[in-house]
Structures are given as structure tokens and as C-alpha cells.
Amino acid sequence: MIFLALALLLGLSLFLILGKPFHWKTEITFAQTDDVRPPYVSGTFYPSSPPQLKEIIRSLLDAEPSQNLSGPIFALIAPHAGYAYSASTAAKAYAQLKGHKYKRVVVIAPSHHDSFPYASVYNGKAYTTPLGSIPITGFPLT
Image (cartoon, rainbow, N blue to C red; front, side, top):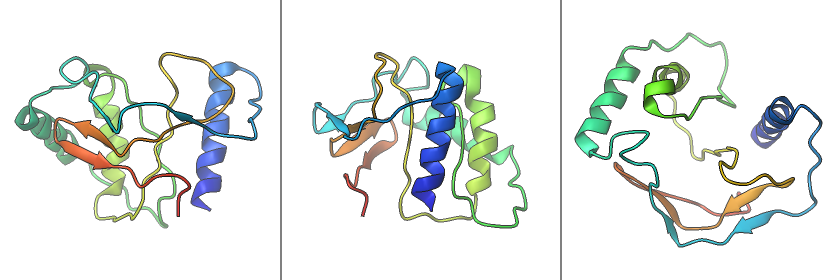
């Protein structure tokens, strides 16, 4: 059910971005890359200093109350532009996760460099951030 919701969300996002229906390829292309993806925009779109980044995130999340939702959260839409542009809006979304625990999180995002009519999956072992590495469980999701 979570996968279906995320797939529908991605399809709607692509329709809104492209202005036309999106047709999926029957295969998924895996990005050829290093085992651990470095934080390419650290220090540009968000602070590279771990204490500074922690403080910004903490203060943004502390400023946002979580809503009293009647059911579980299956999908969350949040912007990911530079902190100066979207951090407070993203914090409003992420604040809804306070008190919830998840075994797996699926991140769906557009490419900032290329346009292609299929899904691209990063097949490395982790994403590195100023706050540490985030392990990737791999594909297919089991």
C-alpha cells in the first residue's frame, strides 16, 4: 500500500512538472556511482558544520507542532530546495513524523541534471551527510 501511494504521488508530481502523462519504462536503470554518495551541496544549500546543521534542524522542528492526525502517515511531501528557501516548509511536513517510527523510508526525487522517462535508482551503500551516513537497504525493497 505504501508503494502504491508513493507511485501515485510520483506520477502526479511528474504530471504536474511535465504537463503530460508520464509513461513508465518496464525496467529500472541503476545509477552507476561510487559506493557512498558524498554530500555534493553541503555548505551551499545547507550548513556543512554538524553542530550548526543540528541546531537549525532542531529549532525548525521545535517551532512546528505536529497535527493530531486520525491515522498513520503513508506518504509525506516536502520540498528539498536550499534551506534559505524551503527549510521552514519542510519542517512543517517533517514535524508530522514526531513520535512515529518507521522501518523503511523511500525517497522519490527528480534528477537535477538529466531528463529521462524512467526511474533511476542509486545502487550505492549509503548517502553521506554532515550528520553521518545513511545506509541504503538496496533494491528490491524487501
